[in-house]
Image (tube, helix red, strand yellow):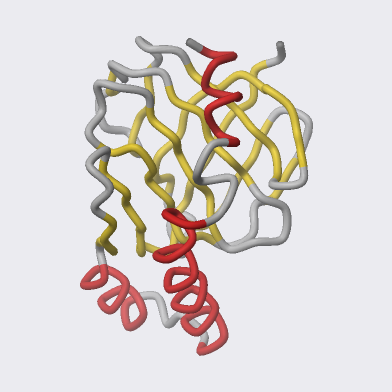
Length: 164
């Protein structure tokens, strides 16, 4: 398996979360990468964070989100970031994090996070109206989809099995 660098940036191009993950494959939902328990991620230049759980990440083509699927013991089962469409190269995936997150806890609770940050950054970074509208539409769709549609129900589990 080859390693791929995952790089999230903010709208001003400032480095946000980044890490190395293993390429697991691609299907109709997008590119799947995974990281075993004990892998590290980092926000900007802050200290690295060690992940206690294995996780896989979906990078759809031509969609405005990415999604992380966490193994136990993490209390968040699914963590979807609203982003610009992912840019792909052989060993790097990159996108702009647009602040909004849809989170599904292991108990089934679903909520939208960071709406305040999204509102602040619309002004701070002068998000264009089409970016605001598409981010909001994607967030609203994901809020429903994480509990009712694939790959959020069972598909991700086959990829998680590859990385445990």
